[in-house]
Structure formats: structure tokens, C-alpha cells
Figure (cartoon, rainbow, N blue to C red):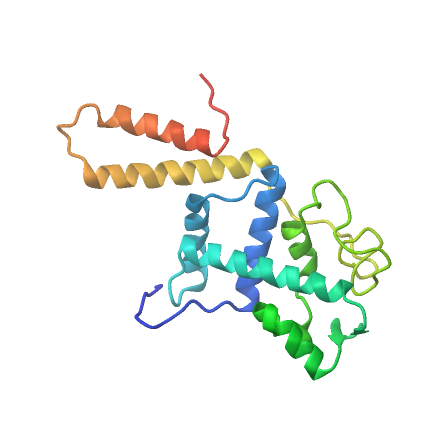
Length: 220
């Protein structure tokens, strides 16, 4: 059972981060690059709590993680285009002096781990955070070969299909819509009484607004 304890913070391991990246990737791909709302992040946090337990995650937990990953990706791109750095293809990391690295992390504090680990799941990072990804344009400098392909995206290992698993857009939208509606009705059932004859009408109107906000078609 997830717990909320004073002084404890949510711990992100590789499994949690990859799952979050995959959810972001699928969502952006199916929603025309539209960012997930706070309600969607709360739903994902609930899924994380059910799956992983431990300290409870919240929508704000996922949002803050997304912002940190964005900074990590920006820092990684700087390393790919900065001149005067070596590159180790085995570890997928840059090779530089301690002084050079120290100067880099002063302005990129989220990227300290990149010196020894490289960027895990960099194709997912590229799909999510590269602004020009949807248009197919390159986000990297020309001539760069540090872990990226000729089109500016992350290099793929030979034989990789490069295909990402995606839900059908309609199925995904329906899933999130039904989750939102169910949560809304549960909230109203706890805060209204049977004497309120118009409460069900208000609830339906509220749910229609939720679906409109999420961009889900409403049929008459």
C-alpha cells in the first residue's frame, strides 16, 4: 500500500522512469503532441502506486520528473554538439577532463550521471522532448556522430525495428475519459445528498466539460 511519510521522497528507478517515458511517448504520439493534463498525470500516478507501492506518487511528482528529464535531455544535446570532447561508444559517454565536466555540470546539475551512464532510453527522450520531432526535422548539429543518426535522432542498434508500441488513439482517449468520469462521479457521490434532484444533471454536464477539455468527440 503506497504511503505518505514525512521526510520521504519518491524514488525513481530505471523501471519507473522507462514506464513513464513510454506513457509520455504514447500519449504525445496519439494526441498530436498535446501535453498530458494534471488529471492525466494524477491517473498515471495512481497506476504507479498500484504497480510499485512504496512512497506514494502524485500528479505533481510526475510533472516534476518530466521537467527534470527535459533538462537532462537538453544537457545531453549540449554534450552531443560541443566541440573538443571525446566519445566512448561502448559506454555512450563523453570523454573530457575533470575541469571541463565540472564547468558543464555547474549549469546542468541534473546531468551529473551522464558522465558515467550515458542517456538511457535516448530514443524515447528524443521522441518526447525534441521540438522538431513531429515535423521530422533534425534537432542536432550537422556532422555530429555521438550516438545520433544522420537525421538527428538517436542511433539505433543494427537490426532494431525502431517501432514503438502505441495504443489506438480512440481506445486511449476512451480509457482516460472513463477514468475521469468515474473519478468525478465517485467524488460527487461523497459530497451530495439524495435530496439534490439536479445533482445528476450537473454531474453529466461536468463530465461533458471534462471530455471537451480532453478533446474527446461527443456524439448527440
